[in-house]
Length: 215
Image (cartoon, rainbow, N blue to C red; front, top):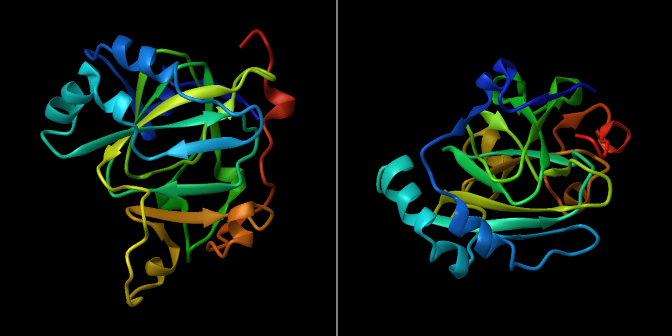
């Protein structure tokens, strides 16, 4: 697997690096959040992150006044496991270097995607990265062996909370895993064992052989 940069032209189909937002206060608050040694933990909303100046700047500017939440995904991860999408852009602000595994939503056919379509991008600590609504993504991956990560996750309020109770009307309804979260899981993933739609075919990508200290 070739690891590219979020600053490269190849990332343009998936998102962009945001400029003009001061992330210092957000990164300082993020650094105080808990980070497990094994696995990852995700919080859709963290009050200490939403109390920062970056929150109001993104809410009023980038999201045009839409109600926001800032949570975090912390820990260590090297596996693809799943891919998700939302009806809107997500903004990730990593406290440490990370890898993003992404794929185009347009490549999904009949609720399935070949993992050979997945690409890896390196995102350095401290920047803000927009992932478009048409970008399949999931938990960040380690960029350096054994270091782990903390990543602030910015989304419209309510995203990734309790799944609405709905009567399925379309095949896509079967992918809805949480509020504003449609999920394709790999058969080897924990999420598949919990009943998530199995929609990833091929290898469950492990970035371990590709990450190096010098990244």
